[in-house]
Image (tube, rainbow, N blue to C red; front, side, top):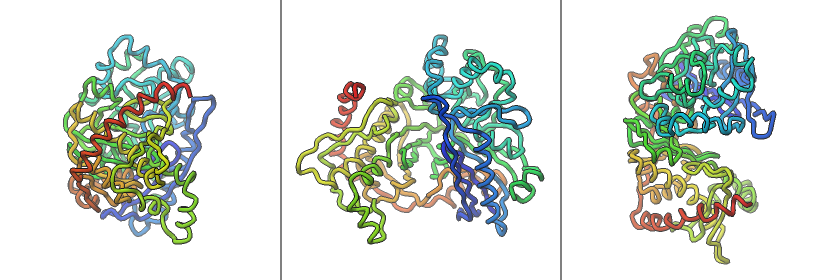
Length: 501
């Protein structure tokens, strides 16, 4: 028996089968191109996405004969919207999250409702990136298309529909539309009325982990699946990743380090106030029943370390090749244990939360002739971590409980970076030996739904194992508290300069 997790991202999809004990049996990855028909526009061809997902399913299914797939669950990016006709035909490309054509639409909606009221209903700080603004744009600019649409899908519900089951969306992905009532767990009539959008054009909603159907014989044959495979509602990719990291209690935080560094705290009661809006922090249903999550992120996370490697680490790259070592291990072995004298603002692709300033730029300050390469590497790690520390502090001030941090992704492999985070965050940091948290989260949902696990808690205890725990060192934690006061002045001091640049 195996469980299939699918992660539909912005530029590619992962399809992974897990044995009941969590071992990865087979996996496939497929890329698809982002389409930019005009400057600032960003689209995906839903037919191509389905083609790549189905290719991945076929590849994985062909390798699981001895452990046939019993259940499938899908996680996907949020905000994207695909218009579909009743026979599954895609009527137009999906508009993805960071597409600029919707600029200004949210301001129009806010003429008749306050930002706090929007968040009290939807859990979302008002923004043009959300699906609701995209639907308004389509209705205004493509009225014939709008009239022809049967349903507007996100990618979770779109893939499920193509698998041949009923078109429903889970609560976590529905919330990313800015049209879902996160308290009453239903579409918000008020938000649809304000946007003048027909709510019937969106699919029904269900909790994550709900069995939503069984794949029919025709689709199963096309995909090489056994008969009777069950489809289970998944969720937005970040909450699914949080589940895959074992975030199933309030006070726990996922810290996923990749190209982007993202944190996802979980909490038991909705936290909705002006401080959350000021920090651009959402509050929406977790894929674990009874919990909510929020997101904070650094848009230039591990990619800054990669930039340093490619630009300044020619010697270390050659050494890594000669010694068959990871170049990052070599770069990090000489960083000082104490805080760096230099400071780096990691806004190489703009800032993440709380500012969401796309015009901000990266900067290194405090350089002297005695600054070493190791100190610069340490400054990169610290800069990324200072940004996360600011997010954690703002969330705590807003009322989000934060007790421990669970680290996954590339950064979770570095003892030195994890100790740095424990010191700077002044929190216990637990490293997890998990490489595919999003797909594992969907597998947990699928396995629990069909009774392979008695509960989400049992599945997490079985499948999510801590690798190492790092505790803050009081003296260094105090040093970082003092240096944070300096770091927090860098962005506002450079804000005007960066806009001129």
